Length: 180
Image (cartoon, rainbow, N blue to C red):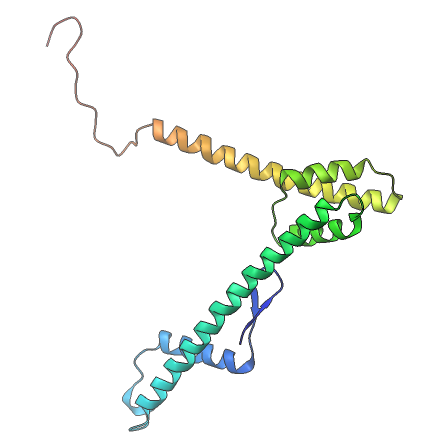
């Protein structure tokens, strides 16, 4: 069965699973094999067996994807637990936040607030540098997300207000001075 590989959604496949994937891909790419390549009387049972293996692999991939989702949910809950335990759980929180950000997590306002308060806590120069680097990275990610959302929102509003050049011309309106 494929297994989730990390919290990024990647999966690890066994050699047998890769073989099934290769056969399924080959059948999808080359659905009609020439008659001379098929052995008489053996193609139907082999095809049914391939279909069954592909279905089993599909179910296993779905299960692994669900497991990956559960893993991500657990890791985010773990991050929230460490954030709630601050300032006592500083080391664990920073490690989990750094890992989550590396995996594509967008820091929440609670994370940004926690990082601001942690930057005011006394610590050594190496730890201060680590905290400020992580805080800068998280603030940059959050700011980029806000800017992207604003540009999408303002762009959509603008596009809705401006008629498309391909649209039909507006009907002529009578002149206001009464002449037609």
